Image 1 (cartoon, rainbow, N blue to C red):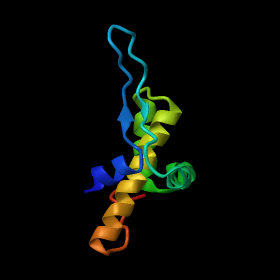
Image 2: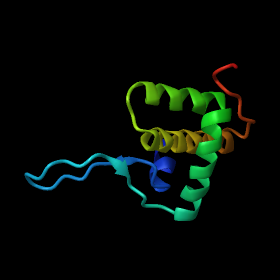
Image 3: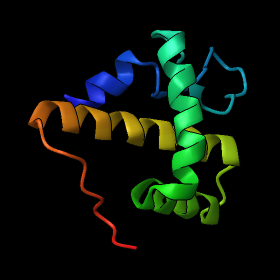
Length: 99
């Protein structure tokens, strides 16, 4: 499934918690192939300005107060889910949001 694919790539947020210590901010798990994640990072930077679906997600997260890197991580996950859907359904990508 798409969430499992994103998890395999290390694009899921994880929380660090240990006993009574202060919780740290969530960060990407970074458990998967780093080369693929690096390619998705660059693609997410471009898509956050060009792709209507990813751009809308990125802007929405920034408006809700998320930091730019957290919004970019969510954009990477969105791109991974789009790629999974295109491969699974064998159909070209159709943006859900019209420009």
